Length: 265
Length: 141
Image (cartoon, rainbow over all chains, first blue to last red; front, side, top):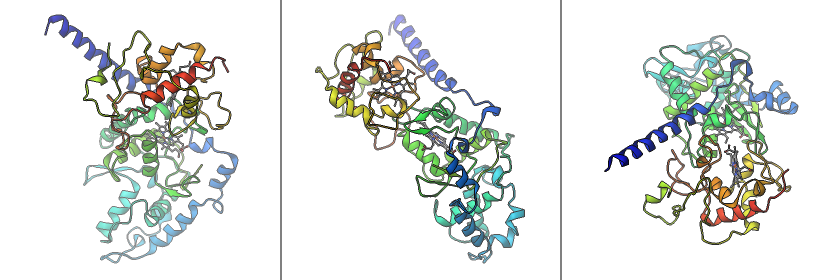
């Protein structure tokens, strides 16, 4: 190849790289003081539904979870309460610091995964069905014990690599529509995608009751919905990418009050 | 210059070659004229054109329209036919940071879901229909 040809190729290459860098660079993180929960974008009626325990459909799962907490299960014949006692004390603030890096696995596990670990390892019972009623009920019951508490995921030597990995996924363009999470949730939050206002993607309310789903759902379900909307291949259920994204989102929402079980349109 | 997409072996759905001149694709992707009525329906259909997810436009029967992008009213007087065609084929050629999806590009995309992999969002014919429709939008909102 001629020298000119090589120079032209090198230029193309650099132009290509510059293109990639400016995609990532485009996303401007939302300043801490300007953050707001998806709750803020809801109608007064939907907010009232979340605020009133008697009207919040998520409370049905919380009540189921309370019963499951007491139920002995598995070959160990233990209930959650046998190990953890009264959840109102022992689980206070726990959901606010999840996903957490498990010292044994050396990777972040989210609340649902942590509950499954207790179930299979401590109770020695078969895993609950992902996104099934019982797992959601236990997660909702545990998360409820942190309601109103500030999200407490911190960046330290253990979490830093996973927070970065989550941020990288969040800022990466994906799918046939070639969009990143940041394109919508950082750069265009508050604007309307078709009729729906785009929230800032703070995971304050999960698991939450979505009127559109007519049921309670986990944060992983929400992320999967957004990926499908981008026409990207969703990660396999339980894939590490979800825990990394969840960890990044919780860190991004640090200090914001927990709302679980939330309600969303 | 021909777009790089064209070097891939041609599958039935693969984008066909086109030439970019400046900020335009001057020639029709199909060689023919699009149908503005079909174009309007593609733009209005949320699962096909997807345009009204982000844009608003003079399509009053579609109540839920987006506010992420300029109103499409007047698009036909703001841009030439060739500019509109390039914008829809691959808006990143006009603005590298754009959030507007590339409607006729299949390379350089990551983790496209299996059901859409290797397919452009719209076919050449559909893009010509949309261009023909946009050219009828002469009045600003």
